[in-house]
Length: 165
Image (tube, rainbow, N blue to C red):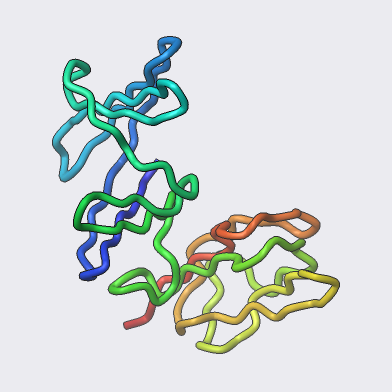
């Protein structure tokens, strides 16, 4: 699984998670950054979260909204799993994600279709209202990751559009 970490200065780090190994108390996260392999150890002790790079010297980690934000002493990082939201920094402007829970009512495009910026690509029912989800860029539909009738949480990648630019 790919993770994107974006800081307040618009710096981006891409991390590819290979696997997670759990041995009871400790979890080992095996991942690659720029092709180099790393292992990070994490464990909970007395309700607090601790991390270690070598599994010997442990440091306390902040506990925040799961999977959304990480904070160190000087930096706040936004974490995005599997995609980078539309229009974020230099992110993929063609990635459409849900902003709130909802249900897919209608898909109006297929993979390979050419779309124009502002064209409606799907209808999402949220809070008893049907919302038109429009393409943020002109381009070609690269992938459709949802299907009609599917109930979604917020933050789900709906459609990816390859930008024509």
